[in-house]
Image (cartoon, rainbow over all chains, first blue to last red; front, side, top):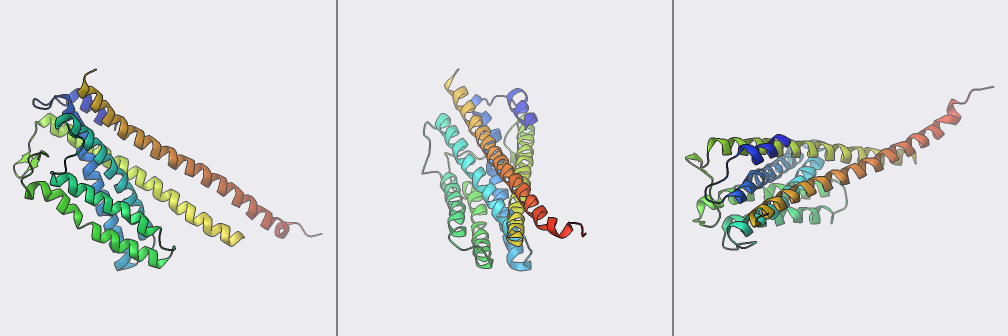
Length: 209
Length: 56
C-alpha cells in the first residue's frame, strides 16, 4: 500500500486533461474492481454452500459480501468526489455506470437485512446463499454497462485496444490494484478468523455451561 | 492548496479513515474474544480442579 501511494504521488505523471484530480483514479478504480471481486468471491462461496454443502462456506460468503459492501461504499464516495472535481456535480443520474453500480451496492446492502431477519441455521444460510448468487448477475451488467451504452459522462479507460493511458500510469494502476487486493485479502482472513473464533467460543461456552 | 488538491486529499483520507475504522473495530473484537477465552479458561480450570484433586 505504501508502494502504491508512493507511485501515485511521485511516479505516475499528471494527466494532461484532468490534471491532479486524475490521481483519484488509482484508488477509485482498484477499489471498484476489488468490490466486484469480493461480490464474485461471495457468490462462489455461496455456490459451494448450496452445491457441495461445504461447512463454513456460508460464513466465508457472508464475510466476502461484507468486504464487498465496504469497498462498494468507498467506490461511491471516491467516485462522487472525483465527479465533483471533473463534472462539477456529486452525482449524475444520466450515467448508466454510476446508477448500475448503485443498484449493485444497494442489492448487496439488502443482503444483510435478509440475513439478519432470519434465525441462525440452515434456512438462513440457504436464503443468504441464493441471494448472493442472484446478485452476481449484476456484476457483468454493471461492468459492461459503460461499453454497451453510449455513456459520454463516465470515461472508458480500458477498451478492446487495451488501457488508454501511458505505461507509467498503467504500472501505477497495477500496483494500486495489487495493493488493494492484498488489503482486502488480509482483512477477509482477519474478519473470518474472528468470526470463526467467536462461533467456537460460543459453542465452548454452551458446553461448559 | 488548490481545489483539486483538496478533493484528492479528501478522497484518499476517506479511504484511509475507513480502513483505520475497520481495523479498530476488528481489534476491539479481538480484545473481547481474548477476554472471553480467559473467562472460559478459568471456567474450565474450575470445572477440572475438583476432578484433578489428589486423593487421600
